[in-house]
Length: 247
Ligand code: ARG
Image (cartoon, rainbow, N blue to C red; front, side):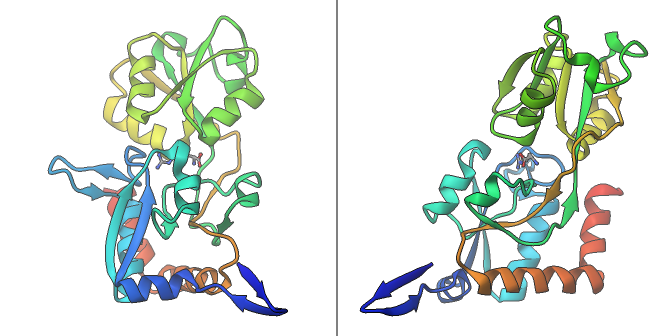
């Protein structure tokens, strides 16, 4: 931001300079959004977003430092300098964009439904869950939760802090449907499909995922957008994409 002193506008230091001086890029995310950010058996953070963050740190010639944070508090954590950037499958919503800046989208998601198999064939659209007899789940503080409240206001809603717990609730029949980002549900379906789960392929929201940074830092934003254009065109993005989505 700008700070006015004796009528002279002084620009605050760009995060780009802070990162370079520190020699570290601190990346905030909430592990469990598979395959974007997850924790390996050895306790390492891995995934599509993690690899993008590593490529970013490499291009800046600094160390990559992962900072795992609850999604619900991820914007306040960015604003209080717990890390430099959010790379967490975050949808660039207009509401969030009032608080933070987003670089150009790096992925497109959209809400879909994973339902208990007892509804197979009978339910063909998410809209049918807009009924008080149904229990719908999603994750706290996400666009999935916002979509349920906006589009399925009549359904009973229960929110979970972890993606895996929301999925479990539908698997064991305690809930009817899980509304969440398509790629994550697709991943659960591939791994757990035989466990009483059926997916509706329809995507009923438009959700560009983007890197989030603090407002008032055009230098950092410019760097990120040029970084993205470069890796989209030099094979880096495709290689990382194939690693997490096509193997
Ligand atoms: N795209 C959704 C949102 O922005 C969900 C993101 C959740 N990310 C995570 N790393 N758990 O609200």
